[in-house]
Amino acid sequence: MRVFHGLSELASAVGTHLGYSDWHTVTQEQIARFAEATGDHQWIHVDPAKAAAGPFGTTVAHGFLTLSMVPMLAGEVYTVRGLSMGVNYGTNKVRFPTPVPAGSRVRAGVELVSLVPGTIGSQAVIRVTVELEGSDKPACVAETVAVLVP
Image 1 (cartoon, helix red, strand yellow):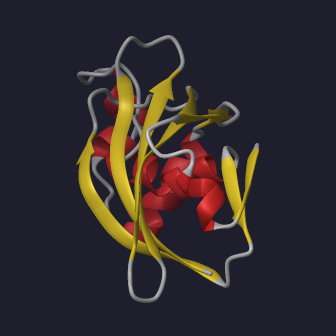
Image 2 (tube, rainbow, N blue to C red):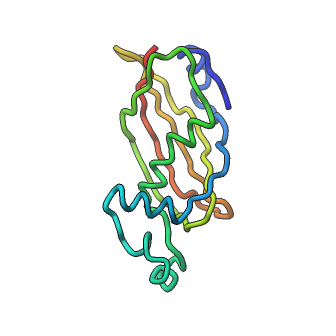
Image 3 (cartoon, rainbow, N blue to C red):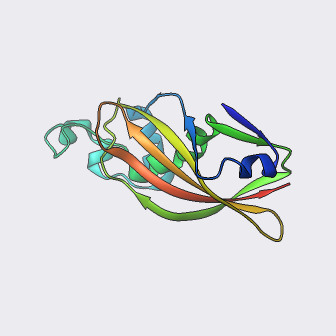
């Protein structure tokens, strides 16, 4: 875990790789709960018998489930102390190059792309690459944007 004391210290890390999260197993139960929360019950996610005969040979996580893990994974990599708040401002780009099979493990690598001062705080662009254990392709690459307020 990298700890930055304020935005000026974080600014010195622009353009650098901040580190990796721990590995996390994506379970079928987690996939099923995400399906319930979002209403996305497509068989490739929630029907293990049908998915076994499908294109991936098993159920796979929703792409948006993988994306929803980004804040938790990035939170294991770095923190900025001395902020009153950090607000999710959105994403510039998200891709899901390879599916995440149920029972597989993922981790995130985090890079601070930019930090631009604004009127109420600084806008941070963070590239998060969610790696799938044993795969040459990442499960998700997301360029997230946050407003960090001192």
